[in-house]
Image (cartoon, rainbow, N blue to C red; front, side):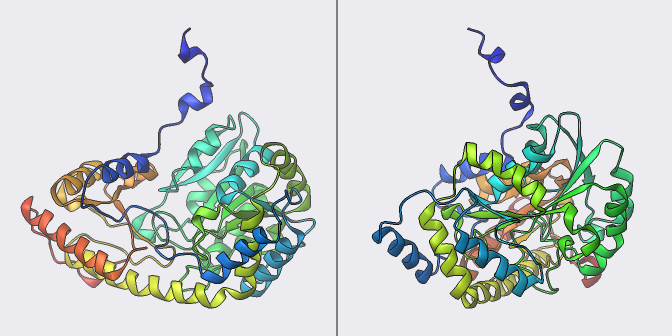
Length: 400
């Protein structure tokens, strides 16, 4: 049997995750400090865990409605209105999904045809480009520039749109750069989206982790709201990564199409997780604020630390990642991460794991304690000294 003939041609086009290689290397090396994992170091707040446990003790272990518990969908709508001034209806506009990943998948499959073009921002989360390829569409990459604070500009968007463009996939606050788009930033691109008629898939999983500016969504603009499919979830802000719970909100016409896929391939999201999420939305915002404040302290500390080492790092305004520039070392992104891991047992992720536009950068997560970050910075300093890289002083004007 010729096995290569048995695989889907689309799957063959998808490269293995560039993050996974470094996770595997780190897990095989004793004494590693990993700054690579995009996961909160907080346990899920106890009251959320308790609500899930109680639901199981009460025998609530059956399938829920395909779209999710109606009670949870109501809480999602209440939360989005209260926090971000977004109006959705629980019956018509919301599907509860198995994480944000499933939400992206069913959104893509519901709207994309073979031969369509989908605009993807680069550097960007590792799953975005493969999700386009697996629909038979062509990803069209827009390179986000450090000098623009990794924002999407109207000029870049306008240049990328063609008659074949069906959608654009956005992620702000961004993984891996920590970049954000403000209301003013979005105002510049809304007319382009309106006039072109393209759909917007907006992954806003880090919405609660916005530090210096208030989070804004393209769904806040009434003239294009019916073109926006908003994706979010509970993993990052509520420290519920292992619960695998997300949601997608949008126009009823698209939600019905997505639900057809969801009901056949998933049935419904985990029941106990849904009861935990209800409790989180009702009574968990104090914990969200506490975690956000902690990340803010860590952000300021780690950005300052990398800039003192001479590895220029712009100040991210959201998520829990920094994207330091390592071009001054002369190493490639992958070469830098491999050497740092071998020499000092510090694991980071090469920028190229998030697209070729990430060359010359590394992604570093600050979802770790200050003590771990201090130790990692000391080891990175030693690595730079061992390699003969004498860091230049980074001035305020270099920090974007």
